[in-house]
Length: 145
Image (cartoon, rainbow, N blue to C red; front, side):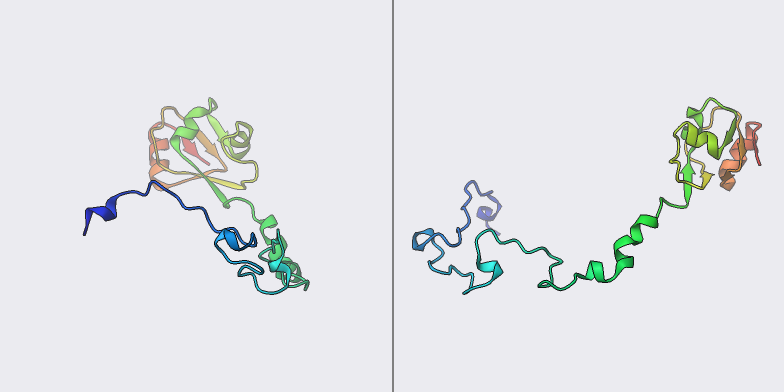
């Protein structure tokens, strides 16, 4: 392989401007746009969903249009020990996590996973924990209800 292939280009060539006469480098008259029609006109932009005036697919199938509105976040929020260390409470529930803005208010459940280092005794109410996280919480004298 030649070393010339590795050299970066330092000049750029401007694109040919359509419909600007014979001197533009792209012919004259129709300039590769065809004879007539929407896309031959100046400034024509046809949306990707446009179907020639017919009702678009996104409007014909209404569940496609509104399906994403009903999805919330994942069903269960994952909490690490670092998140629990931020709260000064010893009794931690789902409501207290939402109040301190540790998790989003749309979550219905939460689970503690063993990641990071727990520095204090905590009691979990209505929150599940992984096996490794439960072992570490109980080692510090905490409980899971």
